[in-house]
Image 1 (cartoon, rainbow, N blue to C red):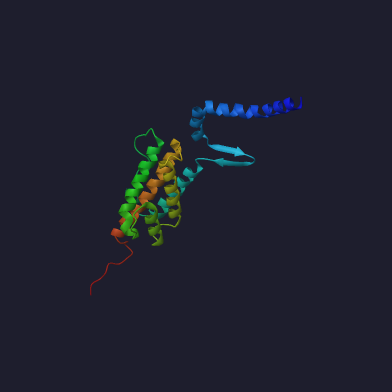
Image 2 (cartoon, rainbow, N blue to C red):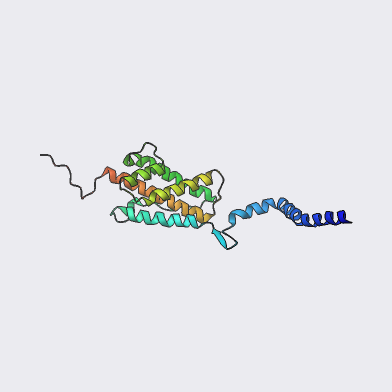
Length: 197
């Protein structure tokens, strides 16, 4: 009887894990589709909220644009449309198209930043080191690049609102790059032209 009771105890202990594993296997596709929609996870007094990073980056980028270009008379011409004109079905496309615009603006602003690798983070770092943009823009560009890499390599899925916020961030940084490039072409009005004797 002792062996039979032990075997029964083991079987009772293994029933629920086996049921859980079977359920996960049977419902793996529907569960996989739900995981990207999770906005918040709470356990043992700690919680993680997803999507806040994209909103925070968009807000920071908006403040950076206003701080860098906002006071200029030509700011209205410099600021791009921050969202695409027509809705795009795939949120990843919304974000990656905006990041492509940032990469193009960074390539154009590379000479103003005096950097060889004309990609967004080195260009914005170069512009910040020359005092053209706040140092905070370097961190925002780095965070955006990390998110872009996660999205590109399939490690992160974007909800439409997150994609729009990240697109706003990318286009705001692109506007800063374009502004820095333009300001290098034409000296500010406060700098006197070189007089010839």
